[in-house]
Image (tube, rainbow, N blue to C red):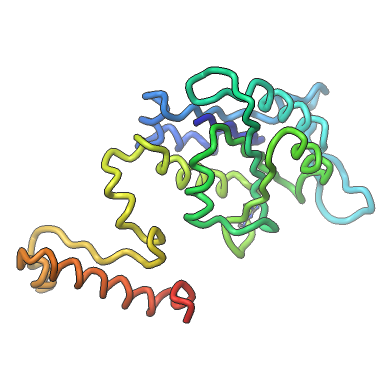
Length: 237
Ligand code: 6GU
């Protein structure tokens, strides 16, 4: 999968070279490039923002650098084997005004060949950029949840990690992907390791019983119990 991220703060994304996603990039499974939006400016001050038409607080990101960035990144959108592809990129703008990102969104986006993330700052991006982007690919405005961040960078970090780990081969043991929170609509069960007694606290004895059927039922009960306690909305209650 190819992922391009456009931002005025590229160093936010240094963390994506670490750990699993770093390995995926080294092995060629993931082709991730972070771009500085200012590379598509032409004035001495590398201006990316201006005052809003109609007045109001803050600044708005200018359309011209975004247009050039999207043209450049959408051109020759490659398939994962490096050959040219007719498939258009999916262009994602993180926005608290977008659809909410879930594990289902991550699963859907993990099947795409080419994702472009456009990180907005200030009061947002000139609306015409979203209209123009729709001529180059499928545009999605996506929110991390109902709270406000200063810009899209942290949201894109979260989305790239959630999507990237679902690309086949990124997570070493694919079985570890299925027994997780949100994969089956429930929160995950509690985990324990050695020692069996720690600071007077015992591991639930059933986990030491060797009875795999009983352990599976216990874990499922645990999942339902803690989902009811913490996230009743997931049960439709
Ligand atoms: Cl995607 N962007 C910003 N700026 N704030 C957010 C968000 C995104 N998701 C939740 N809050």
